[in-house]
Amino acid sequence: MDGFISGSIHRLTRSALASTVRSREVNIMKRVALLLSLAAAGCASNQRPASADRYLLTGTRLYVAPDAPPLDDAWVVVSGGRIEAMGPASVAPPAGVRREDACSGGVITAGFQNSHVHFTDAAFAGAVSRPRDELQPPLSRMTTRFGFTTVVDTGSDPTNTVALRQRIERGELLGPAILTVGSPMYPQNGIPFYLRDLPPALLAQLPQPASAEEARAIVQNSFETGAKGTKLFVATPQGGGEIRRMAVDVARAAADETHKRGGLVMAHPTDPEGVSAAVQAGVDVLVHTTIDSPKIGWSAELVGQMVARHVSVVPTLQLWGYELAKAHVPADVRDRLVGGAEQQLAAFSSAGGQVLFGTDVGYMSDLDPTQEYALMAHAGLTPMQILASLTTAPAARWSAAERRGLVKPGFDADLVVLNGDPAMDVRRFADVKCTIRAGKELFVRTSAE
Image: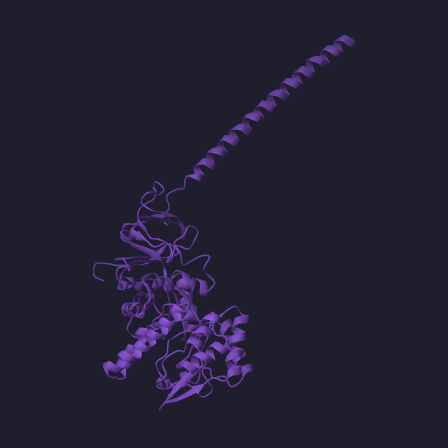
């Protein structure tokens, strides 16, 4: 009996053991199959599927950065709104990437920034609900048509401009990134004479703080409504040679409050005394050179202070000829005054000052920036210094140097394709074939343009 039980137990044990082994073998096979399937999936994921937003640009020349040698017969791969890779002709681009023919074949640079624009034209009014077909043409003509992937609005109705920015961000409009300072501040009772023909209701809304506390409150409200900075008219022409100046404590309070909120302070200086006041108030950017004073020169001491305090300058040289022609100033006087502004730019740049490209378009109805490039070159800036004023300098000024301003893997795919080499002729900066922001084509030149 014990032998029978012992034998039965032995047989049952062997049977159970065999069953367990078979079960383990099945489980192992399942796991092997699962691992093989995961491995296959991993291999497939390493081979990027074709994507509509992944494409190859080829160019006759690529300016990676203003201070780096250009690459001839180069290429750039864009994927997911960023630059995936780039290289010269000697290095083959990734295989299987579709070529974007419409924007290939030109000179490629990082996207441009216009650091002085205004969205005050009637074409942009009612941006919150105005039909796309009415907003898109003027937006393209003013910005992306000339390669601007980022613009700084230096004074407009903040509600309207923020609405325009939001519609661009939602993809309802094809446009640049918009940085705005909202509505500028003026000296107390200091609206400039050239704005006095605005509607009385609008004039009443223009901030003219009488105290430091009022200036801080205006800045706070401006940032709450979407501003990224503040613009101060530290000195305003009143006509008849009179200049109204912003109180020192008001300007400093506005600058301090803006910096506390991480924004930049921009200033309209009017004359050299206004430049000095802006520097002392702690502004970051002068939005003009100056011509409205007989003493149009900037002293070496003043330039030194500007550079030491890291004040940037937007020259707007083209604006001066435009304004003087409207005022019927004789051509020889115009040339002398514009030449004085060129000298200011030359002195500032030679001293190591940071120059930001800007035109005052929107106030100025001449949309084409070609003349600005020519005047900057006439002042002594090299093509690569002008490229820096469009790309790396504004990116650094607005704390965005880690994501834009260069053609570099990992950076935003903000790109401009030009029809010619600006190193040969700076007017080529305005000869835009394609404008691309975050990988999306915002402007593609047609044969009719």
